[in-house]
Image (tube, rainbow, N blue to C red; front, side, top):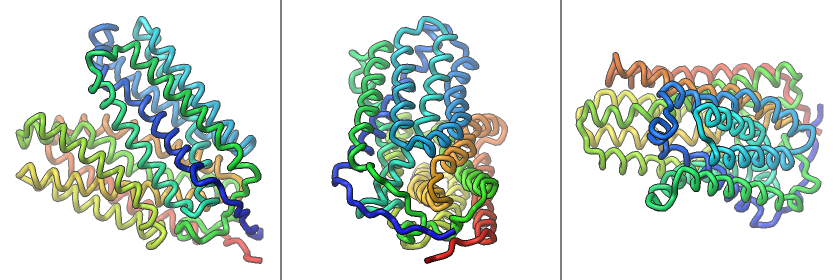
Length: 410
């Protein structure tokens, strides 16, 4: 199959920033629930298991729905699917403000996950398209997508903390719903810039060629390739999600750090992740997706091993900062590779990729939390082994893609 030339109609300079602002708003709304976890137990008499189901149910629903959302993206386009998914998420967020019992909270959280599951493939495709049609390029655009998401996730709890005397459980979710509806409205403003978009899989500007040089993939090959890329991202997400409980536990119980140290350094780690996301696209373009992702996994392995051996708070925190700095490189490299898998079916590819990828968010804190009880600081050695598994998956994915037929060049 011949790779078609790209349509290079330029978009307005504000197109991508508007989309990224919409992503940040949606992620702010997502994390407003975190500061209210203690309230869930006190006010709604929710057990730790029910609270876990509320959070896990969101992640599971989001993961399962993404392949269906991806198919709709390929049929209708990313804009209407992302808009519809965000509207569902906003409605579920608003409904949470009226919740009176544990059952309704779990149900609305699952519905929220369904909305996110439809929205994510659409948002990825929109980011890829706008990046391709601007001077930024896909890799940098996807990196900035990750930065916007992390900034939003960090700002959500910060907003609640800043107005802790004013924002209640009810008002927090009303505000969250308003932000998500605004996010959906901003998505609609991209219509003029996306008119006539043609996805270019023949462009070499994104650095994803090594992992996905295969516009001639069959449906089955596309499925396998997307799932393998998603599996590599699963390991990366597993590390990030596992560190959310393990990092503060390790500092407090093993290194006896203060609560202030834990809070400040974790916040700094999120900031490093956001900055790393912003610049990761440049690295992916220069080194290529496979080399960048592999190098990032190796650095994570070494940092986690160093953290496991650290007997000083400063060394352990430095290891954590290194992991946060290179995690976005894997994030950008793998998503850039997904955009290269196929012509006209980015939604399907992102949907299956997301299904596999999101499993890491579900398993990471559960497995790591359980292991910490018995292994304590040695759990970091297990996390280092997970990064090696991610590295091997990258290698296997690269080998598989090279056996697929490459597109002919006219």
